[in-house]
Image (cartoon, rainbow, N blue to C red):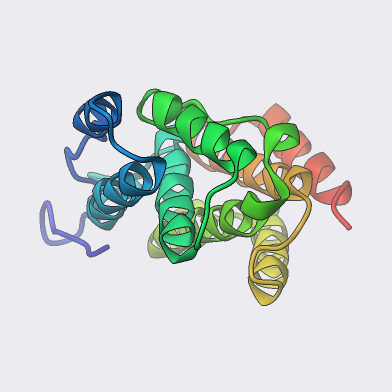
Length: 206
């Protein structure tokens, strides 16, 4: 991710990139294997997240579900590419991801197979790290004294998940993700209710 200047003072990391997995889905429908399909999807998603940013003309944008889903499908595809075999539960999970990611839909935390907990957790970490990086670009103008401690708490939890290679309860990863999305809503819209939700979600984490 890099900043492309709009003018001398305006930060801009966003791009017009859109995630489109239509051709990947068509390849699977045309008798592709889940492994091949997951690897192709991972390539598309890696390219998408490389181009993506959260600052548009100096304004922070939300942490979108499409971006998070792309990070997850990329991580899942990479993991499957390293495996000798893909069990039925994992195959169904990959296909559910593939069906919904470009519409911002991801499987619920409760449906994550044990084999996919690690890539799911790592995907959350990567999404949070990228978002935190762009928030930091605007920190002086954006992060007030109330938000700064929450931002640091999110960072600390993210580092804990990274230290565990993503291997945490998917529910905890989801709470952390939602906390950052709520914090983003507070920073963007001055939404006090979202700020309280972010605090509450962080308080629920171990």
